[in-house]
Amino acid sequence: MKRLPSGACDCHIHVYEEGYALAPSATFVSPPAPADAYREVQRALGLSRVIVVQPTGYGFDNRCTLAAIERLGEGARGIAVVPPDVSDAELQRLHDAGIRGVRFMMLPGGLLPWDCLSEMAARIAPFGWNINLQLDGLTLPQHEPLLARLPAKLVIDHIGKFLGPVTTESAAFASLCRLLDGPRCWIKLSAPYESSRTGPPAYDDIAPLVRTLAARYPDRALWASNWPHPNVTPTPDDAAMLDWMTRRVDSDVTLHKILADNPAELYFQPA
Image (tube, rainbow, N blue to C red):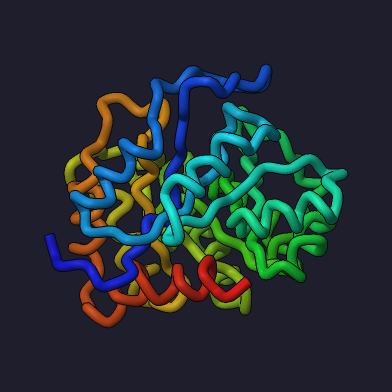
């Protein structure tokens, strides 16, 4: 595995700790995945920064995520899930605690609907936050006009998470690229197992998407482990996932941007 740059960031993990009750909307029960266990992953991979993403299982209760940010220290930031009527004071409190975005999960387990996306984006834009969006990428063409108009930054999960066959010539991939051509969109080159039909270790059907995105959008690409890989069996190896991404990036300059520069711009600007 290549030596990682200073400030390398894992842009999507989840923390599950004992003592925090799952929401009624939870779709599965995750084994404990405490912040201290992730710290060992950080050390093993050579990462110094991390983004803790609120799991769907905890619903609107962000306490576990906030505790993880505090536990993981100055190099940690987070993504919350908040109700549509969240107060400005609560948004400020979350910002002061390290939150830098709101998660919209448009697959089972998600709580925030499409019809509150624009208003939420307008409310969080003054904080410099992003909308963290997970959806079936095959639906991107129908949502592209809305997403292109959002006033806040937009981060799309897991290589678009195309839940069906897709190539670099597909209409859905073209839609993703048009969003990345705009001024406020980023893409996580993460979790190929979420959409691959050919599977590990090469994920040959998803690898061309990553090569294309890294080459075409070096300033808009991020990497994430998706630790602890919730509800995925067998559990992917974190080092192998990082190595898989780095081998599909031809330029060391681009790799530095993906792992360090782009996350710094998106999540670690002065408050």
